[in-house]
Length: 382
Image 1: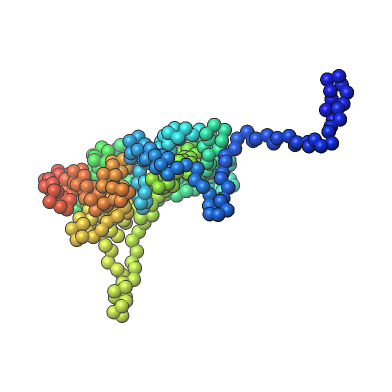
Image 2: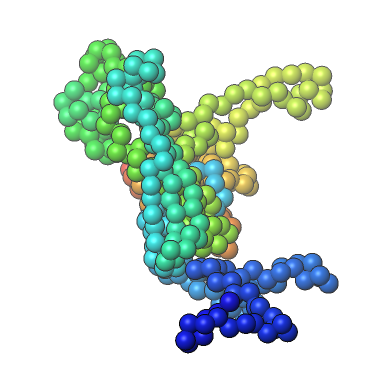
């Protein structure tokens, strides 16, 4: 009962009703419209005009600010660009999002005592995107040292003189032997066939001898993976970019061609291995392919284009990686031949072949009337 000014208690009127105190509003609240009983759907929070305006603003930002090969790029086997870490950071700045990254879990076995005498490192991070104190989106990402690209190394033959992995096999018509190829950054040294300094080296896939050297890389990769996914969610840009896959290897590049049943022969009552197409052949070359293998792949690609075959991302990126072309340069070629998220892969491959003929004068010109004339045979001491 309330007190009067002089301290006495006042009686409440029998007819008076006691009103409950108002419920305080939460500190932060998002109003979500209730479903309409007549239509049973959620009403939009913005007009169509505003939605179109926002979409156009994002589209213009991507076209004018983000750079192909730096902020995003096409990965072998993907049909849509992947958003890279620099691009994700720019998207956060554009939308006014604050990035908060926290380490959720880690395993560091430096000696391999708990993992079969093989060192093992694993990191898992969580990234939250905030507008003020309000969480907009979050994602997690992990990376460990037993992922194929970190656990193994592609060991090529290294030059005893300069220490670079730029040794190639010399052509038989030039005397064979081995050459530290200058066009790959080598010193030009020559070695005869049978030289154990070259042929005694272990090549192919080997375990990384220094896994501790990649600890910082693993941490940065886990942080990056945890960032890209929530950026795509918060900014609604999944129609422009795919999920974070730029660090994933594509099996077509390092895979091997296998014989498959000949379906035409089976229909006639016989079986046998199918003949690999030009596309099959180019997919089997890897980053350590020899000059002859690359040359043969280029010939197969030209034959495929001249024959009216349709090439795709696998052939483009496998050849670009084998030559090798810089990824940024190859991405620029791919983007040049892309309109409305549709890539003319035949045109992109033709331009690759033109560029290949420039760095390899003995290569045949790319198909088409605009192909340059074949330069003279280079002077190679083999």
